[in-house]
Length: 334
Length: 293
Image (cartoon, rainbow over all chains, first blue to last red; front, side, top):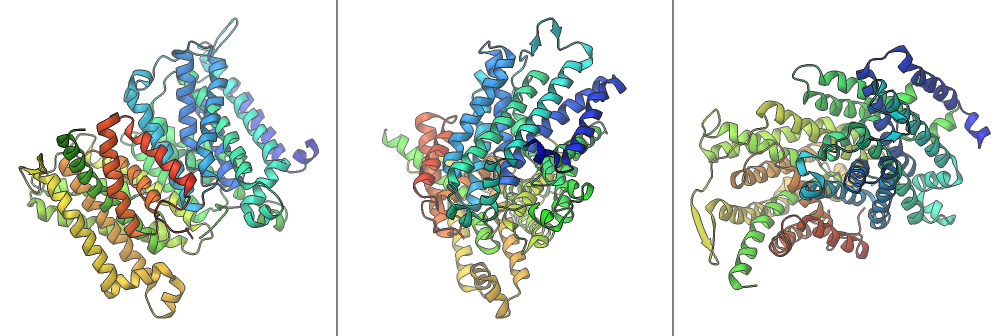
């Protein structure tokens, strides 16, 4: 496994990026920059885990932002109303999200093409309506406020200009991407890609289609739920905005701009798009307009950069490898 | 349930069903012609309502409501042509056209709805009613506007059916939907018909949006919730079948009215979704649909 991980150029880039990320708080003690980087870590995790279902498995999963949002609310509610320790809430919240994902996946993995999009999309909008309607519990459109924050014995996370959150976020990102990397390179991950590239042949070779897809959905939802949990204890508010079309398209644009079927691409794009989008939010009159720009970026990426940023930055060695690196695609095309 | 309550449920179900039928028929038309699902349909509804507001009496230009509605529908149809040109046409023949166009139309939704918020602001707008006053159906009093919706929907849907069945353009659209290559071979201008189908669906969206806006208020999120209902409807009805979709629209409208009456407005959407999941587990191609391509 280690040898296989080291055999590509990915780890070198990863280690470089990690070094920069580790050193960043020492280069600048700007709270705002740290805040932006923490958002990058969170969105990076969500985008990379989405790519496991969308890119590697070829499931047309449009419920991923909802899994993230449910993670935010599950952790927030467990910590605030359940009185659970926030660390435990994050973990339990993600497990809950994974359970919900399994329930949604049950019909979804048996469907084809557009029906997968429709059901996952309808699910995510119903999750939003549910959160808004249960306002006694969730605060409705006002959102859930004053979520307790994570603590370590002897250390207050509110100190040191967000330094603690920064490193927890970075660690979560590192662990998530490493975990997902191991997942997609395992035999399990291979079977997922086999399903995506040739479902009939994979089935004929004895791969249980529905079960593998269900596992992939549950795994990626768990990671998204974890990111949501960290988002809740970091920002200390949960707002229905996390379920919106705008959030979905922001994270989807990270997957597309970064490159479908890679893990580091979406993380890289999370850096560019989060910093860009937040910088524009400070320009007067662009608060709504920046979402429009993200939408345009997404369309342009689909049109002109089908392999994503990563294909432009990291030219792959051989032609066969390039062929194995997919652009946007799915199990069945009409 | 008393007879009065039953009448109330029936009438409100009929109103909702009519709105859903108009909306879902546009989605179904685009699907069966171009083979894509247009997520921007809800945003086009909202755009139609705002344009009508700007054109009509309460807005800037002060046109009579009927004229304002027709102009707004025509403008949104033009936006539809533009969207097809920019978001759909570049991806014809793409091996994942279905998924890519889901994404581009999703991006269009965000672009349009944020643009609408920028132009018209977050404040609620009131569209002048096309038909003022109240009427009584089955002993239930509803606004004439709602009665108008119930009356207009079958006429519009009938006209759409006749257009697709008898006019040469409509037959061309169906031919392209069934087999684009063969249609091209016999000299049909496929891209032109794709654009016409998309524009027609956009016009239907605008009309639906204006009708909804005239019974509720016009807000930037006007089209969001109906879009979700329309998703459920096209899954129930089977996307490719226009008739199945329309039946499903009325069925879901009635079921929703019944659920709202019995278990309340908060739980009705979730219950509908659970029903949908059950249907999908038993019949993955939709209640009335055929196997998808």
